[in-house]
Length: 506
Image 1 (cartoon, rainbow, N blue to C red):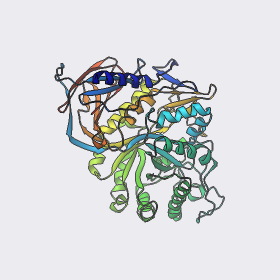
Image 2: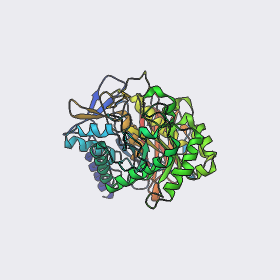
Image 3: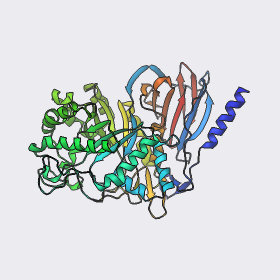
């Protein structure tokens, strides 16, 4: 009778989810289309009896979070196995998410209320992929419809008398953030990043280009951050972290046109130890903010070493933010080297997207290759001490915008502005195979990074709430994997070609 009740419950749970409505755009995969009448969902995770596991699969063949429940076996049936070692513990995970850009809000607001709700629930609800981290730009970015800051006065305003949030905050950022906070029951860590200072604070008097922060405005710039946090706090929104600024290296690649502030390691050291660090750490409301250094490419981590050689500046920093755009030129081992050098500082991926290079097509609907690139990078980062991974724009239009400098790129969700629908790219499911099943507080444990050509990572969930194993098959063929947990037994499965797979057991 107990087995019958359990089986009935599992069938009911399976029926609760909504399947993907596939559409093929002629690339190397399909998308899942959502509108007011239909949007695919994924079952909320429910604990199974000891001795059973649940496996979710998304693959090129069309499965999206396809769910199977099975039993552990007492023998493997395979020539070799990958051992899950709970005694070997590494970093504690903080979470996964995306950015609340103006473009995300603009595109979400183009949808009718029901479809917009589907979009937000897809990212943040229990039947979605349960994002737990959000990046919030301080002012405008390249994914705004104009260049702006919160103090665009013609003359210097060192007392910040005219500081004011922009129209974009009220229309595109704050409403979505509040909705996300509600959907996650406030389980959402927000961190802020600034792209540029007001023009009068910069050496070149422009939002972009080779300009740096003028020395006499070092403290003014930090006071500007405090004004931002105060303004958002008045709206009921509080922050977990702050980065030292988005991609300072952009000031040395002026052809991009992206808003930026150029820093050299020694000038940023002075700003951090004399202005940013003391102001934040002595502020009664914001002293516990996590300060995140770098917020730039993995390939530029040697510049961080120069920054962190200044012990006083380093003492104010809690973590290191890393972008992925040139990861194919440097191995993930660089993250481990950084961890070994600064073991008390967490490492987190803070921005990623595809379609970013000049020769790329901005949006490729259905591209499995792009989704696979996300999954492999995330798993490699987790294997090398990353505590999380944050995507860039959560929603863009069919051309990869809006972006006022035509820096069009791809996103996990693309809004069709002519039909009022949106579709989920394979990259959405790549994110979800981590974000939904690896809650904050999970601890990476021992497992081989590669097994039979498959990428593998294992984590113990917090509060003794089971174990998560993510397996990525980038091959063109099915590959067998045999996992062994001495507390449970063996899981031996054929992992389908071109697939993302998550196994959870208790």
